[in-house]
Length: 359
Image 1: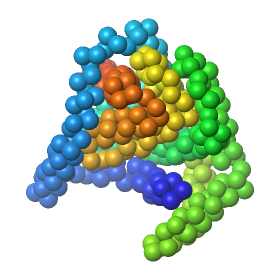
Image 2: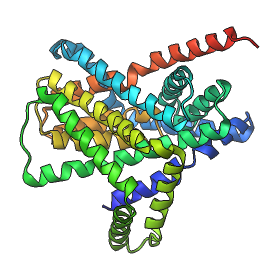
Image 3: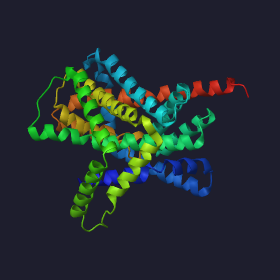
Protein backbone atom coordinates (compact mmCIF):
# COMPACT_ATOMS: atom_id res chain seq x y z
CA UNK A 1 0.00 0.00 0.00
CA UNK A 2 2.97 2.31 0.59
CA UNK A 3 3.97 1.94 -3.04
CA UNK A 4 0.39 2.46 -4.18
CA UNK A 5 0.10 5.65 -2.12
CA UNK A 6 3.39 6.96 -3.47
CA UNK A 7 2.40 6.16 -7.06
CA UNK A 8 -0.96 7.89 -6.68
CA UNK A 9 0.77 10.88 -5.12
CA UNK A 10 3.33 11.01 -7.93
CA UNK A 11 0.62 10.56 -10.55
CA UNK A 12 -1.18 13.63 -9.22
CA UNK A 13 1.93 15.75 -8.80
CA UNK A 14 3.58 14.85 -12.10
CA UNK A 15 0.85 13.83 -14.52
CA UNK A 16 -1.19 16.98 -13.88
CA UNK A 17 1.75 19.18 -14.89
CA UNK A 18 1.48 18.54 -18.62
CA UNK A 19 0.73 22.26 -19.09
CA UNK A 20 4.09 23.23 -17.63
CA UNK A 21 5.93 20.54 -19.58
CA UNK A 22 4.38 21.71 -22.85
CA UNK A 23 5.16 25.38 -22.25
CA UNK A 24 8.70 24.59 -21.11
CA UNK A 25 9.30 22.48 -24.22
CA UNK A 26 8.15 25.41 -26.36
CA UNK A 27 10.48 27.89 -24.63
CA UNK A 28 13.62 25.75 -24.67
CA UNK A 29 16.59 26.82 -26.77
CA UNK A 30 20.05 25.41 -27.37
CA UNK A 31 21.86 27.03 -24.46
CA UNK A 32 25.08 25.62 -22.95
CA UNK A 33 23.15 24.63 -19.84
CA UNK A 34 20.63 22.70 -21.94
CA UNK A 35 23.40 20.99 -23.89
CA UNK A 36 25.09 19.89 -20.65
CA UNK A 37 21.79 18.70 -19.25
CA UNK A 38 20.99 16.78 -22.41
CA UNK A 39 24.43 15.19 -22.40
CA UNK A 40 23.97 14.19 -18.77
CA UNK A 41 20.63 12.49 -19.42
CA UNK A 42 21.94 10.78 -22.53
CA UNK A 43 24.77 9.39 -20.41
CA UNK A 44 22.27 8.19 -17.80
CA UNK A 45 20.22 6.59 -20.56
CA UNK A 46 23.29 4.88 -21.98
CA UNK A 47 24.32 3.50 -18.59
CA UNK A 48 20.77 2.33 -17.90
CA UNK A 49 20.52 0.58 -21.25
CA UNK A 50 23.86 -1.06 -20.57
CA UNK A 51 22.60 -2.39 -17.23
CA UNK A 52 19.41 -3.83 -18.72
CA UNK A 53 21.12 -4.91 -21.96
CA UNK A 54 21.21 -8.64 -21.07
CA UNK A 55 17.44 -8.83 -20.61
CA UNK A 56 16.78 -6.60 -23.60
CA UNK A 57 19.13 -8.68 -25.76
CA UNK A 58 17.43 -11.91 -24.68
CA UNK A 59 14.01 -10.53 -25.57
CA UNK A 60 15.02 -9.02 -28.90
CA UNK A 61 17.05 -12.12 -29.76
CA UNK A 62 13.98 -14.29 -29.36
CA UNK A 63 12.80 -13.28 -32.84
CA UNK A 64 14.68 -16.37 -34.01
CA UNK A 65 12.04 -18.41 -32.18
CA UNK A 66 9.02 -16.75 -33.78
CA UNK A 67 8.20 -20.05 -35.46
CA UNK A 68 7.22 -21.29 -31.98
CA UNK A 69 4.36 -18.80 -31.93
CA UNK A 70 0.99 -19.93 -33.21
CA UNK A 71 0.54 -17.72 -36.32
CA UNK A 72 -3.20 -17.40 -35.78
CA UNK A 73 -2.56 -15.15 -32.77
CA UNK A 74 -0.72 -12.45 -34.77
CA UNK A 75 -3.88 -10.93 -36.31
CA UNK A 76 -5.55 -11.23 -32.91
CA UNK A 77 -2.78 -9.22 -31.22
CA UNK A 78 -2.86 -6.66 -34.02
CA UNK A 79 -6.63 -6.28 -33.70
CA UNK A 80 -6.43 -5.95 -29.90
CA UNK A 81 -3.74 -3.24 -30.10
CA UNK A 82 -5.73 -1.39 -32.75
CA UNK A 83 -8.78 -1.52 -30.48
CA UNK A 84 -6.67 -0.23 -27.58
CA UNK A 85 -5.48 2.72 -29.68
CA UNK A 86 -9.03 3.31 -30.86
CA UNK A 87 -10.11 3.75 -27.25
CA UNK A 88 -7.33 6.31 -26.71
CA UNK A 89 -8.41 8.26 -29.80
CA UNK A 90 -12.05 8.26 -28.70
CA UNK A 91 -11.05 9.33 -25.18
CA UNK A 92 -8.89 12.19 -26.43
CA UNK A 93 -11.57 13.34 -28.84
CA UNK A 94 -14.06 13.53 -25.97
CA UNK A 95 -11.64 15.51 -23.81
CA UNK A 96 -10.79 17.84 -26.72
CA UNK A 97 -14.49 18.64 -27.32
CA UNK A 98 -14.92 16.56 -30.44
CA UNK A 99 -12.62 17.96 -33.14
CA UNK A 100 -12.25 16.03 -36.40
CA UNK A 101 -10.90 12.51 -36.00
CA UNK A 102 -7.96 13.05 -38.35
CA UNK A 103 -5.85 15.46 -36.21
CA UNK A 104 -6.60 13.49 -33.05
CA UNK A 105 -5.43 10.20 -34.55
CA UNK A 106 -2.38 11.56 -36.38
CA UNK A 107 -1.20 13.69 -33.43
CA UNK A 108 -1.61 10.82 -30.95
CA UNK A 109 0.30 8.38 -33.16
CA UNK A 110 3.12 10.85 -33.80
CA UNK A 111 3.36 12.02 -30.19
CA UNK A 112 3.28 8.45 -28.91
CA UNK A 113 6.06 7.42 -31.30
CA UNK A 114 8.26 10.34 -30.22
CA UNK A 115 7.65 9.56 -26.55
CA UNK A 116 8.88 6.00 -27.18
CA UNK A 117 12.19 6.97 -28.78
CA UNK A 118 13.31 10.11 -26.90
CA UNK A 119 14.78 9.94 -23.37
CA UNK A 120 12.22 11.50 -21.05
CA UNK A 121 10.05 11.58 -24.14
CA UNK A 122 6.72 11.99 -22.35
CA UNK A 123 7.01 15.79 -22.34
CA UNK A 124 8.31 15.89 -25.91
CA UNK A 125 5.54 13.62 -27.12
CA UNK A 126 2.92 15.75 -25.36
CA UNK A 127 4.44 18.93 -26.81
CA UNK A 128 4.40 17.49 -30.34
CA UNK A 129 0.78 16.40 -30.04
CA UNK A 130 -0.16 19.79 -28.59
CA UNK A 131 1.47 21.65 -31.49
CA UNK A 132 -0.18 19.40 -34.06
CA UNK A 133 -3.59 19.86 -32.47
CA UNK A 134 -3.13 23.63 -32.20
CA UNK A 135 -2.12 23.81 -35.84
CA UNK A 136 -5.24 21.82 -36.72
CA UNK A 137 -7.41 24.45 -35.02
CA UNK A 138 -7.94 23.02 -31.52
CA UNK A 139 -7.83 25.92 -29.00
CA UNK A 140 -4.67 25.90 -26.89
CA UNK A 141 -6.53 25.90 -23.56
CA UNK A 142 -8.74 23.03 -24.68
CA UNK A 143 -5.73 21.01 -25.88
CA UNK A 144 -3.81 21.50 -22.63
CA UNK A 145 -6.77 20.69 -20.37
CA UNK A 146 -7.87 17.74 -22.50
CA UNK A 147 -4.45 16.10 -22.76
CA UNK A 148 -3.88 16.59 -19.03
CA UNK A 149 -7.22 14.99 -18.14
CA UNK A 150 -6.56 12.03 -20.45
CA UNK A 151 -3.09 11.42 -19.00
CA UNK A 152 -4.35 11.53 -15.42
CA UNK A 153 -7.28 9.23 -16.16
CA UNK A 154 -5.17 6.66 -18.03
CA UNK A 155 -2.42 6.53 -15.41
CA UNK A 156 -4.86 6.44 -12.48
CA UNK A 157 -6.54 3.43 -14.06
CA UNK A 158 -3.19 1.61 -14.22
CA UNK A 159 -2.70 2.20 -10.50
CA UNK A 160 -6.16 0.83 -9.75
CA UNK A 161 -5.87 -2.32 -11.86
CA UNK A 162 -3.90 -4.46 -9.35
CA UNK A 163 -6.91 -4.27 -7.02
CA UNK A 164 -8.80 -6.51 -9.44
CA UNK A 165 -6.24 -9.30 -8.99
CA UNK A 166 -6.34 -9.36 -5.18
CA UNK A 167 -9.54 -11.46 -4.73
CA UNK A 168 -8.34 -14.14 -7.16
CA UNK A 169 -4.94 -14.32 -5.50
CA UNK A 170 -6.49 -14.65 -2.03
CA UNK A 171 -8.78 -17.44 -3.24
CA UNK A 172 -5.87 -19.19 -4.87
CA UNK A 173 -7.26 -18.50 -8.32
CA UNK A 174 -8.42 -20.90 -10.97
CA UNK A 175 -6.24 -21.88 -13.90
CA UNK A 176 -7.96 -20.97 -17.12
CA UNK A 177 -7.21 -21.63 -20.73
CA UNK A 178 -5.84 -18.48 -22.30
CA UNK A 179 -7.86 -19.28 -25.39
CA UNK A 180 -10.60 -17.52 -23.44
CA UNK A 181 -8.78 -14.22 -23.97
CA UNK A 182 -11.92 -12.44 -25.11
CA UNK A 183 -13.92 -13.54 -22.08
CA UNK A 184 -11.19 -12.53 -19.65
CA UNK A 185 -10.81 -9.18 -21.39
CA UNK A 186 -14.53 -8.51 -21.05
CA UNK A 187 -14.42 -9.32 -17.32
CA UNK A 188 -11.50 -6.95 -16.80
CA UNK A 189 -13.21 -4.27 -18.89
CA UNK A 190 -16.42 -4.43 -16.85
CA UNK A 191 -14.56 -4.51 -13.54
CA UNK A 192 -12.39 -1.53 -14.50
CA UNK A 193 -15.39 0.48 -15.67
CA UNK A 194 -17.31 -0.25 -12.47
CA UNK A 195 -14.35 0.68 -10.27
CA UNK A 196 -13.66 3.92 -12.13
CA UNK A 197 -17.33 4.90 -12.15
CA UNK A 198 -17.58 4.35 -8.41
CA UNK A 199 -14.53 6.51 -7.70
CA UNK A 200 -15.67 9.31 -10.00
CA UNK A 201 -19.30 9.34 -8.94
CA UNK A 202 -19.05 8.86 -5.17
CA UNK A 203 -17.38 11.43 -2.91
CA UNK A 204 -17.69 9.08 0.05
CA UNK A 205 -15.92 6.18 -1.66
CA UNK A 206 -13.20 8.40 -3.11
CA UNK A 207 -12.47 10.08 0.22
CA UNK A 208 -12.54 6.75 2.04
CA UNK A 209 -9.94 5.37 -0.36
CA UNK A 210 -7.86 8.51 0.09
CA UNK A 211 -8.02 8.33 3.90
CA UNK A 212 -7.09 4.65 3.87
CA UNK A 213 -4.09 5.21 1.60
CA UNK A 214 -2.97 8.19 3.66
CA UNK A 215 -3.32 6.31 6.95
CA UNK A 216 -1.44 3.23 5.75
CA UNK A 217 1.28 5.26 4.08
CA UNK A 218 1.89 7.37 7.20
CA UNK A 219 1.90 4.29 9.44
CA UNK A 220 4.48 2.48 7.33
CA UNK A 221 6.72 5.49 6.67
CA UNK A 222 6.90 7.21 10.02
CA UNK A 223 10.32 8.70 9.36
CA UNK A 224 9.09 10.52 6.26
CA UNK A 225 7.07 13.74 6.36
CA UNK A 226 3.43 12.76 6.86
CA UNK A 227 1.11 12.73 3.90
CA UNK A 228 -1.66 15.22 4.63
CA UNK A 229 -4.94 16.21 2.99
CA UNK A 230 -4.67 13.40 0.48
CA UNK A 231 -8.46 12.85 0.27
CA UNK A 232 -8.90 16.54 -0.53
CA UNK A 233 -6.30 16.33 -3.28
CA UNK A 234 -7.96 13.28 -4.79
CA UNK A 235 -11.31 15.03 -4.76
CA UNK A 236 -9.87 18.16 -6.41
CA UNK A 237 -8.29 16.12 -9.18
CA UNK A 238 -11.51 14.17 -9.67
CA UNK A 239 -13.46 17.44 -9.95
CA UNK A 240 -10.92 18.74 -12.44
CA UNK A 241 -11.43 15.68 -14.60
CA UNK A 242 -15.20 16.05 -14.45
CA UNK A 243 -14.96 19.73 -15.39
CA UNK A 244 -13.04 18.82 -18.53
CA UNK A 245 -15.10 15.77 -19.48
CA UNK A 246 -18.49 17.19 -18.53
CA UNK A 247 -21.44 14.96 -19.35
CA UNK A 248 -19.13 12.64 -21.30
CA UNK A 249 -17.34 11.31 -18.21
CA UNK A 250 -19.14 7.97 -18.35
CA UNK A 251 -18.04 7.44 -21.94
CA UNK A 252 -14.54 8.47 -20.93
CA UNK A 253 -14.53 5.78 -18.24
CA UNK A 254 -15.55 3.16 -20.81
CA UNK A 255 -12.83 4.29 -23.23
CA UNK A 256 -10.18 4.30 -20.50
CA UNK A 257 -11.20 0.84 -19.36
CA UNK A 258 -11.15 -0.42 -22.94
CA UNK A 259 -7.70 1.01 -23.56
CA UNK A 260 -6.14 -1.10 -20.78
CA UNK A 261 -8.40 -4.13 -21.15
CA UNK A 262 -7.46 -4.54 -24.83
CA UNK A 263 -3.78 -4.02 -24.02
CA UNK A 264 -3.96 -6.61 -21.24
CA UNK A 265 -5.71 -8.99 -23.62
CA UNK A 266 -2.79 -8.52 -26.04
CA UNK A 267 -0.42 -9.87 -23.40
CA UNK A 268 -2.76 -12.80 -22.77
CA UNK A 269 -2.85 -13.47 -26.50
CA UNK A 270 0.96 -13.42 -26.62
CA UNK A 271 1.05 -16.01 -23.83
CA UNK A 272 -1.55 -18.09 -25.61
CA UNK A 273 0.57 -17.92 -28.76
CA UNK A 274 3.46 -19.64 -26.94
CA UNK A 275 1.12 -22.22 -25.42
CA UNK A 276 1.40 -20.92 -21.83
CA UNK A 277 -1.57 -20.81 -19.45
CA UNK A 278 -0.67 -19.02 -16.18
CA UNK A 279 -3.31 -17.62 -13.86
CA UNK A 280 -4.80 -14.45 -15.42
CA UNK A 281 -4.75 -12.68 -12.03
CA UNK A 282 -0.97 -13.04 -11.83
CA UNK A 283 -0.60 -11.98 -15.46
CA UNK A 284 -2.61 -8.87 -14.56
CA UNK A 285 -0.07 -8.00 -11.87
CA UNK A 286 2.76 -8.54 -14.35
CA UNK A 287 0.97 -6.31 -16.85
CA UNK A 288 0.48 -3.52 -14.29
CA UNK A 289 4.13 -3.70 -13.28
CA UNK A 290 5.13 -3.38 -16.94
CA UNK A 291 2.98 -0.27 -17.39
CA UNK A 292 4.53 1.38 -14.33
CA UNK A 293 8.03 0.49 -15.57
CA UNK A 294 7.16 2.07 -18.91
CA UNK A 295 6.81 5.40 -17.10
CA UNK A 296 10.49 5.37 -16.07
CA UNK A 297 11.87 8.42 -17.90
CA UNK A 298 15.49 7.22 -17.95
CA UNK A 299 15.09 5.14 -21.10
CA UNK A 300 12.67 5.80 -23.98
CA UNK A 301 9.34 4.17 -23.21
CA UNK A 302 10.93 2.22 -20.37
CA UNK A 303 12.94 0.26 -22.96
CA UNK A 304 14.87 -2.50 -21.24
CA UNK A 305 13.18 -2.01 -17.88
CA UNK A 306 9.85 -3.24 -19.22
CA UNK A 307 11.43 -6.26 -20.91
CA UNK A 308 13.36 -7.22 -17.78
CA UNK A 309 10.47 -6.61 -15.39
CA UNK A 310 7.75 -8.23 -17.47
CA UNK A 311 9.82 -11.32 -18.18
CA UNK A 312 10.66 -11.73 -14.49
CA UNK A 313 7.04 -11.23 -13.42
CA UNK A 314 5.77 -13.76 -15.96
CA UNK A 315 8.29 -16.31 -14.67
CA UNK A 316 6.96 -15.70 -11.15
CA UNK A 317 3.45 -16.24 -12.55
CA UNK A 318 4.48 -19.75 -13.60
CA UNK A 319 5.60 -19.21 -17.19
CA UNK A 320 8.82 -20.95 -18.23
CA UNK A 321 11.75 -18.62 -18.86
CA UNK A 322 11.88 -19.31 -22.59
CA UNK A 323 8.15 -18.81 -23.03
CA UNK A 324 8.20 -15.65 -20.88
CA UNK A 325 10.95 -14.12 -23.03
CA UNK A 326 9.17 -14.99 -26.28
CA UNK A 327 5.77 -13.79 -25.03
CA UNK A 328 7.34 -10.52 -23.88
CA UNK A 329 8.89 -10.06 -27.33
CA UNK A 330 5.54 -10.71 -29.04
CA UNK A 331 3.72 -8.31 -26.75
CA UNK A 332 6.31 -5.54 -27.11
CA UNK A 333 6.41 -6.06 -30.87
CA UNK A 334 2.80 -4.93 -31.12
CA UNK A 335 2.68 -2.46 -28.22
CA UNK A 336 6.09 -0.76 -28.61
CA UNK A 337 7.89 -1.42 -31.89
CA UNK A 338 5.11 -1.37 -34.48
CA UNK A 339 3.72 2.01 -33.31
CA UNK A 340 7.09 3.64 -34.14
CA UNK A 341 6.89 3.41 -37.96
CA UNK A 342 3.14 3.98 -37.80
CA UNK A 343 3.74 7.22 -35.88
CA UNK A 344 6.31 8.34 -38.44
CA UNK A 345 3.86 7.65 -41.27
CA UNK A 346 1.12 9.53 -39.38
CA UNK A 347 3.37 12.56 -38.94
CA UNK A 348 4.34 12.52 -42.61
CA UNK A 349 0.70 12.27 -43.64
CA UNK A 350 -0.17 15.15 -41.30
CA UNK A 351 2.60 17.39 -42.70
CA UNK A 352 1.48 16.59 -46.22
CA UNK A 353 -2.07 17.58 -45.34
CA UNK A 354 -0.83 20.82 -43.75
CA UNK A 355 1.20 21.78 -46.84
CA UNK A 356 -1.74 20.96 -49.09
CA UNK A 357 -4.15 23.08 -47.02
CA UNK A 358 -4.92 26.58 -48.40
CA UNK A 359 -3.03 29.37 -46.66
